[in-house]
Length: 116
Image (cartoon, rainbow, N blue to C red; front, side):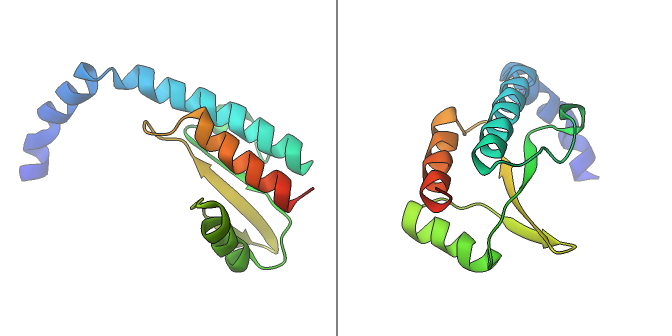
């Protein structure tokens, strides 16, 4: 019952903090970031933008996804999931209210070093 009672407070929070605007800004950064990363890695998008919100998956060529994920963290201080499905590897970006384009630039710089 208590989660139900929080709904009015959550709705007020979202309105007071202009969450629709924040969500839209995050989507715009996500679209831009996905295109930049795909261009850098010479990959095609997995899907149309109409299927995206604040997250995107991007094909990535790496031999060991776990080792590469650890390397991104240790060497560049970037924490990002790399998943595998049907012998494909995917880098997943998630743009939230606290992210900026500078976060994406940091990832792009790291990827340029790793995939020259």
